[in-house]
Length: 72
Image 1 (cartoon, rainbow, N blue to C red):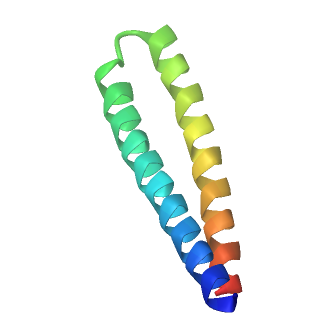
Image 2 (cartoon, rainbow, N blue to C red):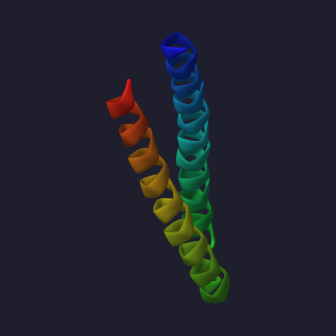
């Protein structure tokens, strides 16, 4: 039973880590888009909001992963 629980936690940590990697890639892309859209302030503002949202999600996912790691 304990082995199954540990395996489930490890799989969950793996899933969360994949989501973290996706969010990190999204942040890199948003940064490039913001740099390229300097002539379009409205679009840049939209990208800034998307970046803030992605940073918040990333922070939450990292916190979740850390909590799961403490369980292991």
